[in-house]
Image (cartoon, rainbow, N blue to C red; front, top):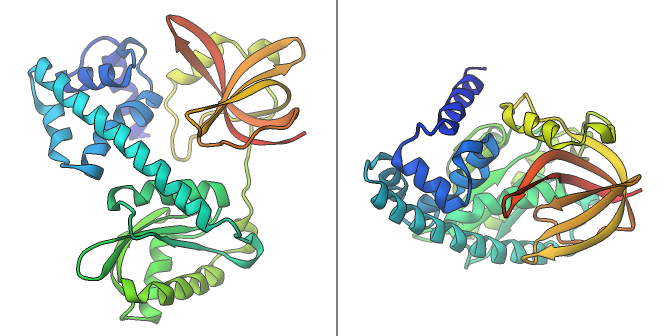
Length: 325
């Protein structure tokens, strides 16, 4: 609750123009409008650019952007952060392609966990890749990259029902020499192992996950708020939802319905852009990090959002799941 209050008040000040030079510069670099600042802007616009510095270069670059009082200096730093974020996206796309190729013959019924490693992977991006693969296969995932002295650095993401840090703790207790160090919490963790021990760790981690997780938790469950009447699928409703502070334990409304697919295309080879029809009403929709084509009629889970382009605002459905209807 306290975090939601802080975010709400912070966003209100940003909308009123009360922000430091660095935040203003980051809004500019992200192509976002401070007067319409939302939690989405923080999580998907400003945040990734700040994080890109620590992932690929020097985290002090992001800190300097936030503490400087010189707007021109902040704008220069923000442009560099934007460049690093584009580079991070490119690296991530290549790594995700590697991961999916390695999992081409993955059998969900045979594995409760996934461990991945490629020698060329970047340490700063393995956590993002682990998260992407976790979302796709609904399994606890640990992605490894090479570190120094024959070691591997791993970053893991979990699913509801498996406390990842506790799972690593059990592996460590069962094989004290296997994990060199680890830490984290329920949904994310990091660790270091010797490269020579990767196969042994993969086997040990699979055994622990199998013992700890309820088989039902290995099937993704999506709870929705049901169908939304077309009369409520408006800009006013989308803007009202975007003004609220959602988060862990208090998610934004998620709706589901059946739509006809009028057309679809890929954006940047990784995002599916669609025109969906419900009755006589047509809606723009986008499914991020989903490249598979949709069937002619779909059952979709979505969140209402506002898409602004060239000064024009439209309702957009942010898809979280698609299946044939």
